[in-house]
Image 1 (cartoon, one colour):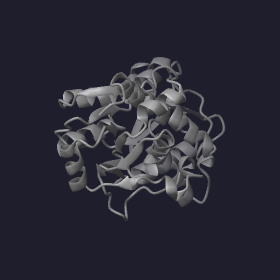
Image 2: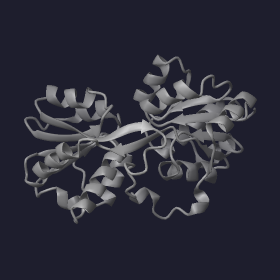
Image 3: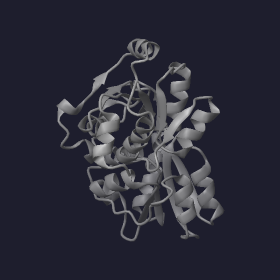
Length: 291
């Protein structure tokens, strides 16, 4: 990881577009701002509650009753779902898990959030922080696994766990939609990552028209995509990027961008704000911090 002084030198004055809503972008935006960069927002994707709530509720009832050995959480958005469901039931997220239940996740961000809401994590990859990394670590077969995930989730995690002997029940926990989600269906549970961040850390939000103007003028230095679905929305709405560099949060996002014909300037080695900032720093340091 680059030294903070080196990052500040590379990122100072850089204008970085984050394609997430303000509540999800704040940790990265705050870090960028502390290093002298100007974070800007253009939310492209959002999340709505699952259409089939009875199926999700039945799976959670089975979870509470001890019907599963493992709960696998593959995104921070799934944690939002668990928090909302706990509130609906008048309990805490930790109370959804019976004694002896173990939890696995795919990286440090989701692990930190899970543990912050009172759910201990027994298994999470360190080197390869992705579905692939978790499958590589998995040795818990045979086991009954509940996998609540997005409606557009790739089958790699489900199929990888099943190939190792796990009995996987995958359920749709939420829908990924174009921003903005319908207000009555939007997932809005507050997570600990947003606690302690003042309103002053919220960056300016651009409209699509303003973003197009910035791209055409060459005044955006980088755009950050935090998921393959964000890469798809960038391809559909923002191309051509001109001199704006595409930064991927991880290998699945980079692979999706490449498949869509978007040149990837850098991929974060770890899918965290620190990892993204390090990737940005590498790109700009190599350019000599000149426009």
